[in-house]
Picture 1 (cartoon, rainbow, N blue to C red):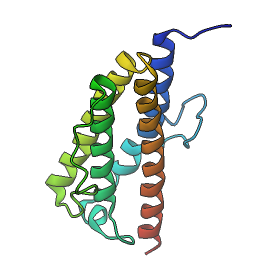
Picture 2 (picture 1 turned 90 degrees about the vertical axis):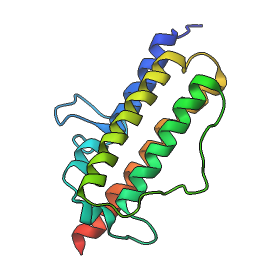
Picture 3 (picture 1 turned 60 degrees about the vertical axis):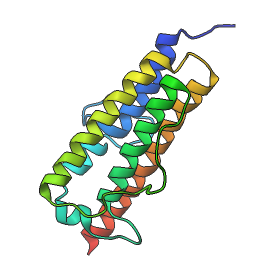
Picture 4 (picture 1 turned 90 degrees about the horizontal axis):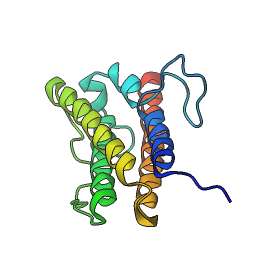
Length: 157
């Protein structure tokens, strides 16, 4: 039986997580996301006003803040196997001005980078760490889909 090294496992999980955040238009292939439609590309063209407009019971800003919360939770879990997140307000920051929206997008990048590093370092350390890493990918992919649907609704007016 062949086994994968910790570097390969972590690297592949980080590659999947990266697909939710920044898929270059010239990427040779994708596994679940369209090229050029990761969080960084999709959110880059969204104004604070649109990010704050409600679609159903949430906003793009709220979804973005929730993804940040989830990434921080997973990063902490993968590193420590403890959960250090206050889930009492799972969709914070639903209405933003331009400065707050820019900060939220920058915070998303920081949270993504931190989670990718945690996965790279710890995803293969044990089954709980691996599960946390897989969960981060699934959570990010799900919410990217939610954001893309919300933006389509907003665009349709």
